[in-house]
Image 1 (cartoon, rainbow, N blue to C red):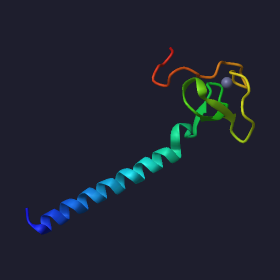
Image 2: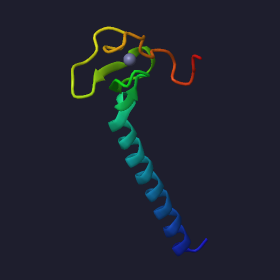
Image 3: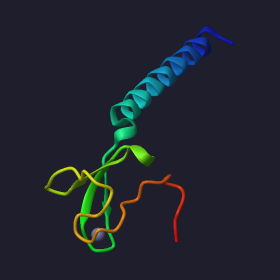
Length: 87
Ligand SMILES: [Zn+2]
């Protein structure tokens, strides 16, 4: 390995570390509390934060939902694991 190759290898390592750092920082910034939208079958839209049983539903342009039911139709809001679909 020439000194130039060693330099490139070192540079590659630094770039990889820097990329990993920024990706980790972005993921941490979004965290597990990334906000996303969910719409009930009745059409009521919510912002959802958190995962699984720790989700917080907020009516779009409104207040957080204190209960576990849709504020419009009363259907239970999803609270199980996201990969599980209840049919
Ligand atoms: Zn609903």
